[in-house]
Length: 344
Image 1: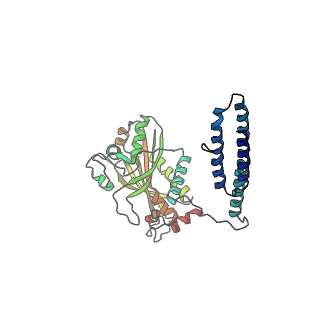
Image 2 (image 1 turned 90 degrees about the vertical axis):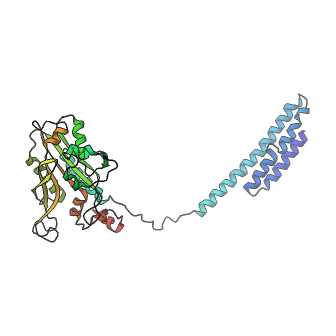
Image 3 (image 1 turned 30 degrees about the vertical axis):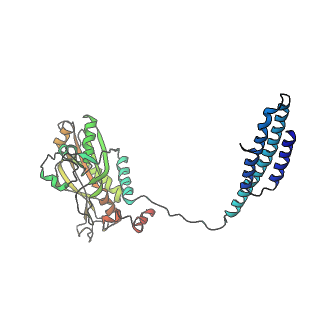
């Protein structure tokens, strides 16, 4: 048996020297060292050996296996190294060639304006409050002094999911939820950004979905002058220190008194032009002192505290800030339009 093992060693090593491919190497591995290979076949005859011969033949068999495996491993490593070298040659890069310039993205103009508005009010001590876009009728209307069948609801024609669930028409429900969460504590000083939905026809100035930011302040001795001063500070930070505002009486069910706020025309500076229809003013937002009934439903005593609220459309601010004439530009994903804001 020893002679057979020595012969197997010589035969295997000779064949391995002739190997030129990884497949040939694998075939020889199976031929000599596999479960049905030549070495295994010889070792099956060890059962007929004496107890003294078995250790000797076992040692010879182990030496033969080790010699064959050593050559196979060396060949395998050589094939792998050759493959790596060939791949490196094939994938060689000329580092002196000019690189490919990747386009640089930018923040969407609506997000940019919303962040600027938030930064202004955060600097004034406000915190951000958020709420659900799918809202209960109670929070969206009733708790804001708009009971069922109130005619003012027609101004906010809505997307209803059920009789009592709808897509919110403004972010005012977040103000209600904030008041209830405060359990009558003051001060309250929040802004409420988010998407809102109304059943409008899309045109240059309207969309069924748009972004809104509303603000709410509640505390002792809050006055209309506080509201005006806050809005003037906001406008001057958004449009420049020369900007001024004026308040025109208006009606909102959730504030009393209520006002529409105009800002001096960003194009003519108040002198009068086509953009402001020669008035020198542009409407920008609505505001007012929180209605006593809204305070009561929010858990506050209107005899003890007062507050003001305001609301603005982010798209409206962006249209004025950048001189854009059509709200639909924000939603069409036209890179020719959006790329202009990468430099702002």
